[in-house]
Image (cartoon, rainbow, N blue to C red; front, side, top):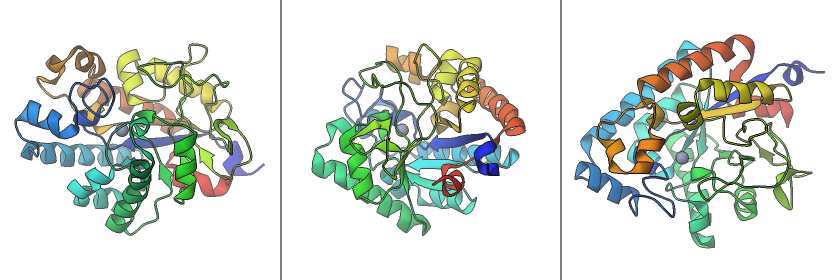
Length: 305
Ligand SMILES: [Zn+2]
């Protein structure tokens, strides 16, 4: 057996979102505001607040420093809209050797897009990121992990080689709920059903769920809400059968004063942002970088395609 098959691998990724992209704030059917722009206007009194650029640039710096500290490369899923707004930050991520992947154009549920809008989001974000960095973009993660056969087909028709939007969680917040047996390691989906293994040459890199309870576990949000042990137990379990994925967001690392007061959902979903999450993330990376290979999807895929 080759070294790549025997060595345990934790795939690290970042969704480059800020708080106003979160589903409690915008982009979903029950969001606090009808759009990201409305969220910014309401909270800052400005659709393009100057401190947002400073916050974002600082958070990118912080994340790159953390990854440098552990000598690891990660996959960054980036919105086309964010690449247009912050091209220098995106180039900086690319120049640091990390993988650039797409997170769509705007941070809205794919289920709310018609066929033409879905096509444009998938195709335009790829082109914007490729033009920005001069690299090929082959991975995709749908905003809010809202994903179905229609999105699976669209990614393949647009030249992507992998998706990372599937989470075999029980139904939660109006999403997930696949009845298929949970898969917590990368797999080739069936051509007719992206939630089952099959013969497509495409890859799905799922987000691990907590054993038995089938609740999300391999994410910064899960770590903040349930504790780092929750994520670690799920990752340990997933790593027994293959590579596992963990992802987080810049907003996990950023406590924004006054934001939790904007809604009950904000109070829940912003729990432990900032320093508490930074400590959890450092602890998880410290633990896993010692015992498994921590890397981006791009650097894992070629050996296993
Ligand atoms: Zn996102």
